[in-house]
Picture 1 (cartoon, rainbow, N blue to C red):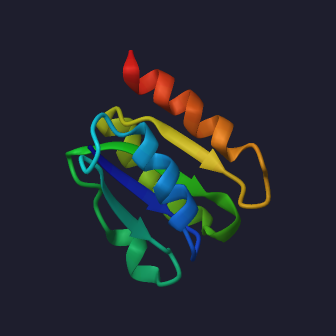
Picture 2 (picture 1 turned 90 degrees about the vertical axis):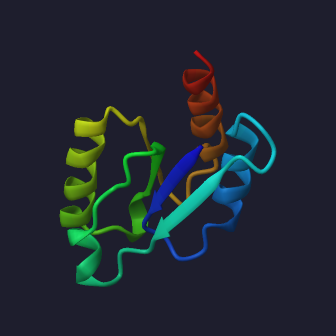
Picture 3 (picture 1 turned 180 degrees about the vertical axis):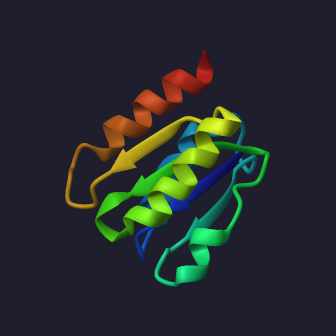
Length: 101
């Protein structure tokens, strides 16, 4: 399973939670786009991506819109997380349930 995390600087905790969502141990490949440089707005989401996680606090609007359009085209589910929100584990739990269906 491939996942893309867009935004944020330290995403280790999110990566660990995504590993719990993965169908098998070691089956998760996580790509992280910090979004600090303008070049990230020109990148393409790989076709094998199963989920995209936006860390909204550290994300430009142009990058978010660019990636969101690609997610819609690929039919990839998107999760929005606020870094300060303690409920982001619940969002990833909802994602786990959606991916299990």
